[in-house]
Length: 522
Image (cartoon, rainbow, N blue to C red; front, side):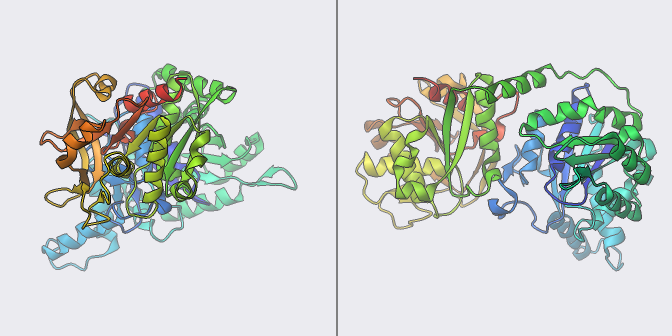
């Protein structure tokens, strides 16, 4: 039987609840246990398919094609393991399932209500993760205590302790402990009130993680222990840091996972954290480097830094593994249209994925600048579409070349719709063309990569591109082009698939590793 750890939030949102949950999971896994993770999101979208990056940051795609909150990416990178579409459950999924059951007559004429039917469906979904091969499931509840949307989830996990047994469930509550500037004193009352609200629901937290900009004094911790009815060892501080990689280690130093394991009656072992500590040491060293690689990520959602979270994490990790300090700037594609020379101060360019025509001309302009000036350039998804269209127009003289998505009547549909029309998402096999730069990067001819797109490169113009110096260096098993490169450039590679989804914190994706290598080459 799996053990369960439930993570809730209080006072305000945006406290790093997902990072804390991922840290707990990583620390337990580092002791040799098998760990799984799930996030329950209270919004009524069925998944993140139609969610704007301005709402929740990037849409993260799992191996099986699940489209989830960006926190699923944090989970995968911290745990260094693949998750699934069942790792992000929304109210849209829960209520859709209950309504379908009602329409199928599964409730024997009962009035269908939040309790017990919605809460039962939440628990049923949660318990599917209770597998013989899983020791611990870490479950994060989105939102904060007091939100009307997440109340059914809190009621469901309240019921879980009675069903699972006291030694099989642990509750962690993450709150904000502000400092009053005039007195410099931490104020514990918001946390006390948040915990009382949780207790009114029937949940007594076992651990309270206190987010603050400054370390808590012992008096504040004693007060929280007393008034929140939590053992002193269960009061853990999480001080604001500019290095997220340090968070698990800082929590570990306070016995974070030890408290949980004791509550779960599990053996505490010596965690294997050497690789993680090495990464953190590299990150600290990188802060003091005077020579820095400057990389521009060109996209249209640059006002929301988390819209490109997986890409920026992959670039940062690739730099750390090569002992290179990487400064990443998010550059608006709209500004590149106005003045492509704004890219002149960067050592490398990543043209980001996305959906929709807005900002697309800027991505085309960025691809042109990178190609003509031989600046290392990695183009992903829609960014790669921009690269192939620019090459068709400016090198192959294919006037009016475009994507059939934006110009259905284009004379040269170098990007065409998938047949049959569909959203291709999840992991698919890709065949690498022997002798290409891409084949040297991967070191193998068959790989799997995650996809999220509705349009493909057209194979119709493959020979024309080849005669003009562009090579399709990867294809699907059915012969559809999936990646291209220009061999005469230092690094000019476009991929329809998304390598950022498979990059990890301790082992970056080979495409990003090679890109950073090219960026750092004089």
